[in-house]
Image 1: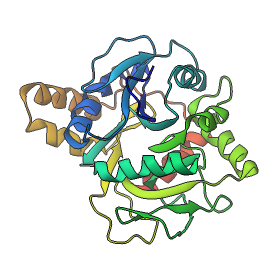
Image 2: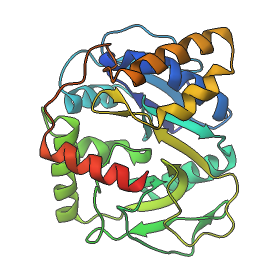
Image 3: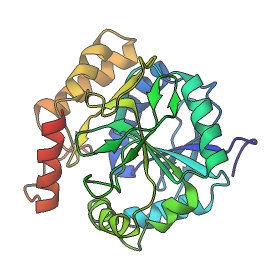
Length: 282
C-alpha cells in the first residue's frame, strides 16, 4: 500500500463513531505538521469515506479495536508505524529534522518501539544518543506503567502486530499488553518529543529544539477540558472553523458523546484508573 519508498507510515487509527473529531484533527495537524517529513500518511477508518488533508483514507472494516488494527497493519507495506489517534490534536509545530534522523536510526538499529510522548507513568534511563537535543532514553520496564499504550509512538510493524491479540478492546490491550511486555522485557526507547497534555520532560535533554505538543481531547467518548483551548483557537479562524468551534462548544457544554448522545453512566475500573492517571498528568 505504500505510495513511495519511505520506510515509515504515519497511521491515524480512527473509529467511525468518532467522526465528529476528524475535522479537529485535520485542522490542528495541518497547522502544526510539516509534510516534508519522510513518511507516508494514512487516515484509517472502519467503513466511512473521509477526506483529510495530506492523507490517504484506508479502511479496516468493522470489528473489535485490535482486530481492526491487525487488518490495517497487514495491508501496509512500510516497516515502521508512527501511530496516532484522531483525538490527539497537535498544539505546537514539529521539526522534520528530528523525525528524519529518528526514522534513519530506527531502521539502522532495528528499534522495536520508541515512545515519543512525555508522561510520568514512564521511568527512564539516559543514554549517550541525542537527536536534535532530545535524549533517546531507555524505558525502565519494571518501574514503568503502560508499556503498551496507544499514545504517539514509533513501532516496528511486526513487533506491534505481535502485541495485538484477537478481540481485545483498547483498554484490555493496554492492560494485558503491558503485562505481556513486562514478561518479554524488550528494549523500549523514549524521547520527550511531544509534551502529552502539557507534560514536563522525562529525560535529561540537551537544550532540545522545537519540542512539539499534543492534547488528547477525548475521554470515554466525550470531549474533555483539553478541548477548550482548541475551541477558543478555532473561534478566531475561518468561517468553517468558527462553525466547527460552535459544534464543539455545544458538545462540551452538554457533555455529549461524539455521536451527539448523552454520556454513558457505566465506567469500568480500568477506565477509572486511566482517568486518574490522565488527570494527574494533565
